Image (cartoon, rainbow, N blue to C red; front, top):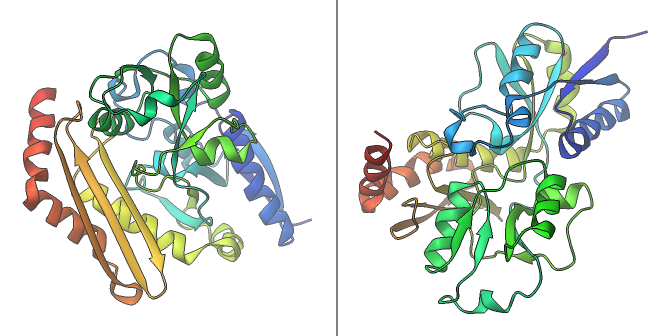
Length: 307
């Protein structure tokens, strides 16, 4: 019998779905694989807002440690949770084809207020990016913190006095929990790499690297790499409202990004494009353009507020 690849995963429904997808892909290519469950800090602290936990890698650190210690061979991450620099000794084995990158609004009841940017409402999200973009559009709304896995967050929406909450479309759609009443937020730019799944392993594990290469999606990998380059160039973490989206259209890559003040009152956008074969610096170039266009002032304000 050949090697059985041990796939590390958090125990949330979405994380297990993603890890099972990778397991099925490996088995479809003739490899044996099994799931190993690992608890993360992000799962055990459900009260503190994400931006107060020293958030870099909060949902990936425990899996990365297990990987480096040899307890698992493969870790599967929602790519938007992965720090822009992988831990030393860890390598990207594959990026899966991207699902929806969109944010969606899950209402408790009526959504008529969304058509009036001067309306009043209370909305829930723990994301500073979503909060800033929402307040930029709806200045009179109040944002409450919402933590927990997707099942917990959906339950809290039903039980709360909120008008609704913001979710990533991919997370709810992958596990079949997207409500029929959900509204696509076409105007909201996503987090860098939102909707993408990253598979990682030890950098010298040739067997895993080879096994995962068969389901690596080059277009998705290019786009999320550009988005993460942009994020790294701006040195933004989860407490910084930074958004980015790169898409391949024919032989071109179109890149859109923005940065907002935390309260949504200030905003700078950037949009650039380049041929696919010359796009490797597009994310960094977009970040430089954004900073020159007023983004540096917003970034400095956020940093000074945190000191």
